[in-house]
Image 1 (cartoon, rainbow, N blue to C red):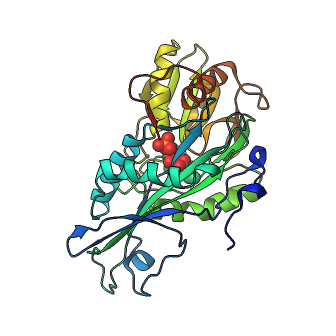
Image 2 (tube, helix red, strand yellow; image 1 turned 180 degrees about the vertical axis):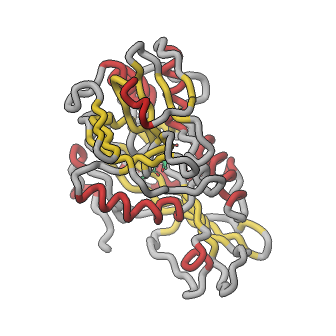
Length: 340
Ligand code: PLP
Ligand code: COI
């Protein structure tokens, strides 16, 4: 794959794609310790055919963004929360945690090294950072790796779904994660299992799947790559409480914003049959930002929100505040923004 040239980018129409930028970070865990990491220009990883990750899926990842501010400087949004979640994921997946302070520093190094690829303010684009770690030992029996590679690549992105245009989603009969499984951590297997249901849903015209709780198939869990929220008729922000979903940093942030906006946010179980209590609904995540949900189809029943085609007022207000904070246009709560 050819290196991305900055002059070939159309900042206003980036989509959500991988692009091969000049630099990425790489560090290895071997002989019982993390080696000093460094930036590298090599986008290719060299792995044994028996590498743990290729057979037993020992992989964890994160996603966060760097945002160009009006004054040209660059901000990260709560990167220490990604670092913490990465540590939690490592523990659940029997991997060697990468120290949180080094994680944030390495993210900043990657942003600085690829600075010209951070989209200009006002384009709606940002630089997406993908920290990840894989088990690299050559192993044939099922056992955890003792060697790991940690990397962070960057790619400039625009909207993951369709920006603030509401889209239809399908409530799936498949599960993305097991009850008491790995739904709470960010590991490749959760996504591998979602590829087939998402592909089928997309063929039928849906943006993605919304999954139900894996034990009873009764309550809303989350989308393939984002958490769910709904706004009730009397203006309350509700989001699923579940042990099989990823604790979204965007969700936690919107929860606080919703509090300030008087939406009395609550984490609770949300039964499918109660979806008609919502006048607005959305997907929230780093890639998704806030993507309004036009409709949710479950078997032969379709639940619609707002008027299905326009973003609702509460969703718009949440979006404006979140994105305003990320772009430095609105005052951030203490500690939410880190300068690169
Ligand atoms: N849920 C899943 C399954 C995800 O992949 C993501 C994306 O990271 C999220 C939720 C949202 O999490 P965050 O807001 O931390 O990006
Ligand atoms: C993110 O939002 O960072 C994710 O990892 C979600 C993925 C579906 C792109």
